[in-house]
Length: 276
Ligand SMILES: [Cu+2]
Image: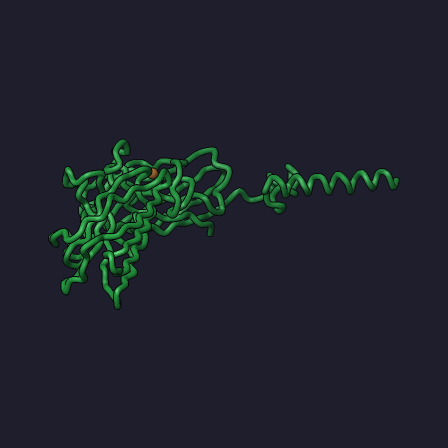
């Protein structure tokens, strides 16, 4: 009897250890199969989408020039982006002259970029300034010249901390929302967007990763087509889906339907998927 009990306790301890090691949640895994099939297989999730890429720029005036650190996320993987300090605000910067060029900003495979540079011969002008990052990889076409993120540079003493956000170029201030519902192993997702260029078409996906650190495609939406008002709504259903992860999925909307170039792939809007 004691031996039997000891064996039972040992088995319990072993399965608990296995559960913890596998990283699965106790609440689900502890149920037997028959109990599992009685659990409601229904999950809801949502995402709030805002402009991509995004990030910060930090400027500090020093004896040898302007020290600039730019950190961005939500760029196309391994992409290259010309960046300039233009005269004028982000509202006007496309018409503003290029005052200073930064070295190209280059992203890693997760769309993250970090630039640390010093711009020599810099003096703070009396006019407004904006940091403009272009779609790239060169300025060879209108689509490559598009400003994909911009931030107004306002010096206080000899420093400026700049939030990099949307621009007023086409498709560069797109926001939206998504709702996800999983029922009977069918995942239904509705994506609604605004701020698109009228009539423009876009690839959109659920990716694994996050808006901060991008990853591969998990599910593809049908092509998103903007109305004359720049809005769009698509609904997609995916079969044989077991769960919506609590975190680790996000939605990316791309500049075009051609994902073979960084210019076309350019992520324009992003939202992390969260349960609830
Ligand atoms: Cu995608």
